[in-house]
Length: 299
Image (tube, rainbow, N blue to C red; front, side):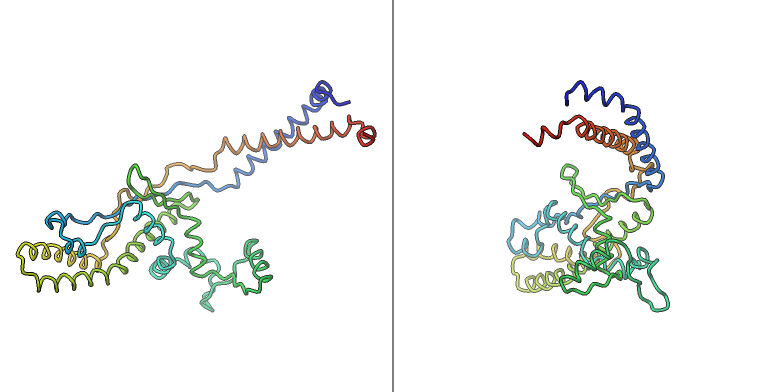
């Protein structure tokens, strides 16, 4: 008959086996740590480049505000920056300039045919089977979409509203490679912003020049001239290699020691799992042995 007293006595008889099982799982945890690559934290902190205070001399003119444009809020710029960094356009810029496909998928590159061999792993096989049943042909050869997915899975972008800054970071076993990736992505994201701004700046310059021609007020002409000067400076900056929309608050930083895996946590996790699995097994055996199954089913 099942009771707490007999159950505790039964477990007491099995305590050595439970202990040995826990030790065995502790050893498995140690073996797991031996084969687990240590990971380091890599990060860069950036922020939005603020516009010059040209509007201070405009007296609130609607004309001047229209020409200058409104600087995006910090949170809005964060979302714009994140969307741009994860975009396929930036991935394409990165690949064209830094050969990103060969850096991350070079082991699959065939120099004779100048193509990439298909990716052979469990994920690609399962995806092929899934898409086959819905009638879609799937080619597992790496391409820009694959590189873009890899960037999204590797690099994190977070906004700190208290520090009013954006952190671009990663936890990786290859900190030099990923650190270089983050630096390059920041530059190519800024280049993407430059590409978007070129036509806008040119339109503003054209608009200001036309307004300058027809304006009669000396104060308004002076204000327009100041903003036109600013837009011309922006146009010059867009055509240089300097950062335009972004500024580096803190450069690339790599943690001195590995941040994962957590040695104590992994060993404790394996030990507790071994203990619980062993105790659960003997609990199930105790219930099976001491239960009067005939009376149980008769009732």
